[in-house]
Amino acid sequence: MKYIICLFLCLPFGLFAQEENKVVRDSTEVEYIIIEGDSIPHKSIYLDEIMLLDKLAFKNKEDRRRYYILNRKTIKVYPYAKLAADRLNALNTRLKTLTRKRDKKEYARKVQKYIEEEFSEELKKLTKTEGQILVKLIHRQTGITAFDLIKDLRNGWRAFWYNSTAYLFNISLKREYDPENVEEDYLIEDILVRAWQQGRVKLVKSPLNFEYYKLSNKWNTTNKSN
Image (cartoon, rainbow, N blue to C red; front, side, top):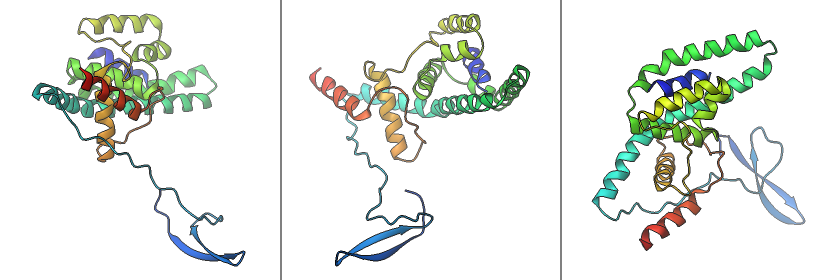
C-alpha cells in the first residue's frame, strides 16, 4: 500500500441553557425563547435535520452479502479519508500564514513525519479492495482525486509513478467517486449516511455535486426495473 501511504505523507442545535420570556405586542401575548448568549428573542428554534431512510431491501442473498462486506470495508477506511481531508485543510490554512519557502518546506516535513509515525502501519494492513475504496472516499471528502493531490503536493512525475504502481494491484489513484453513475459508489454513500444516522461516523458533506435522496430514488427505481 506504498502509494496510499505516500498520499498521507503528502498531506501534512447546541446545548444552550434556555428560558422562556413573554412579550406583549399589539395586545397579543407571544411566547418567545431567549437563548443564552443571544440578545435577540426567537419565536422558534431550528432543530437538527432528520433523514428518513428506506428500509434495506435486497434482491437475493448474494446482494445482501455484497452490501455487508462493502459496509465493513467502507466503515474501516472512512476515517482515513476524513483524516486526509482534515490534514489537507489544515496544511493549506497553515501554509497561507507562512511566507518563506523554507518555512513551508519545514512545516510540511513535520506533518509528513507525524502522519508516518501515526498511521503508516495501519495503512499497510489494508487489502486491495479497501485501498480502492479509500481512494474513492478521498475524492468524496476533498473533491480532488488522490492522483491530483499527490501531483499538486509533490510533483507530476511522482504522481504518475505511484499511479502506475497502483495499477499493478488493480488500483487507480485517478478513480473518482461517482455515486450517480456507479452503483457501488451509491452503496458506499448509503452505508455512510446510515452509519452517520446511527452515530457510528461523523459524516462530512462532500464538495462533489450529488444529493443522497435523488440518488436513492434513481437506484431504487433502476433496480426494481431490472
